[in-house]
Length: 223
Image (cartoon, rainbow, N blue to C red; front, side, top):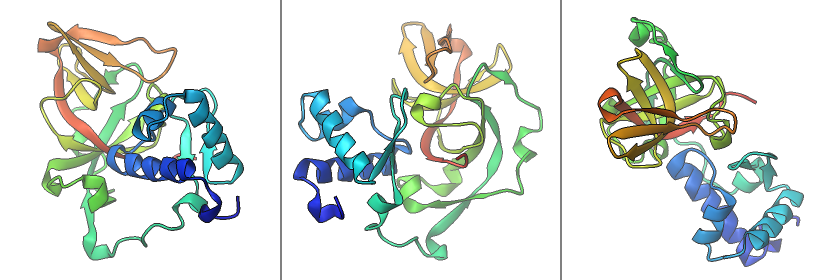
């Protein structure tokens, strides 16, 4: 495969869906999500086409990761140029968030990284008012299967509620801890689910879990 004109229709559709999904969620889709989006019921057929795209240099696959798909520069070469500076918003990095076993957060978290804002494009904000967006630096690896690594920057939309499955910044007041996890409401409890096979879920009373923000995008700073 020398260029995109050599790709099959299924392969072009996979690339388009991956691009849109990453723009919307900040992380790549799973094989099953790709199949559902482009009407391929067999995961083995999706896997076959992903292997073709890998061989052609359009994606990189990370073994043992549920969302271990990355678009390469070759796949993104047709995209529009980087937005002009006037269309870039500076978002403050207000501290760290733990993606692992939650740890106490310093009292002065708001000023910890105040002099290190991050550039965000309109596509990253998904129409959110920039004044309602904040950034946190990730510490830990419990969300590694969502391709969020230690040192990455996560953009959040300020929110006090979340839908099941959303990635959130959750404050646990009874522990004086905050953490980055997938959110699930289960009766009177909340399950904060990591994306790592060796980390257990955190189960707390819904009264002891305060949502601070929902993930808008992830800026991968780690290699």
